[in-house]
Length: 178
Image (cartoon, rainbow, N blue to C red; front, side, top):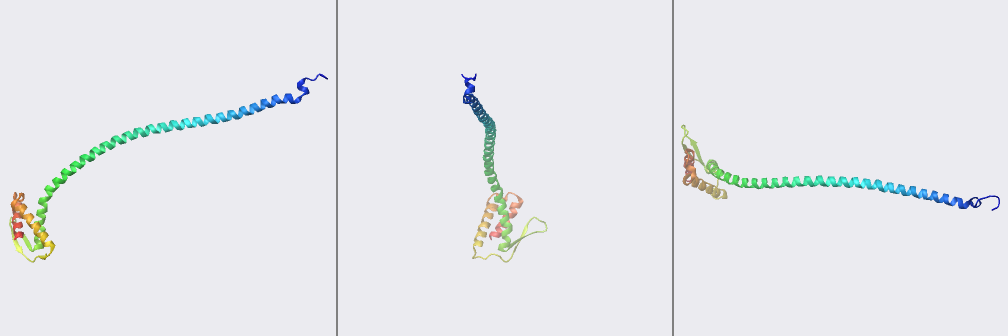
């Protein structure tokens, strides 16, 4: 062509096009590489988070199993304690019934005007009658009479007169009954 110029030199746009394309491809490759690197980093973080979640889930599963086992033990213990409570309540009622009657004889005497004084020998009591603190027409008087009747039933006719103290309280219950 004229003057020894090559085609690439005579048309400078042809020579820069491949370079621009290479630069553009290189730029796109760098961007794609950065995006891929970001995706890999995010995937690594997600994998680590998933591993942590799975580990935590396994730990929670183990702890849950332990808690279920412990809960079962507690339920068994609670049932046993309820059974024992019922038995002990019945036993306490058996023990408390005599105490209730002893207390009734001791406290009701003062309210109905009957005092018991122990003799100098300490074995028998003397009945001293005084003024009653309870009015005959009150509901309390009826309740006191019921308590005295229960005490007489227990000490005179029931199991309360088996000891010397029980015999003494039987005498006192009869004195209150009069």
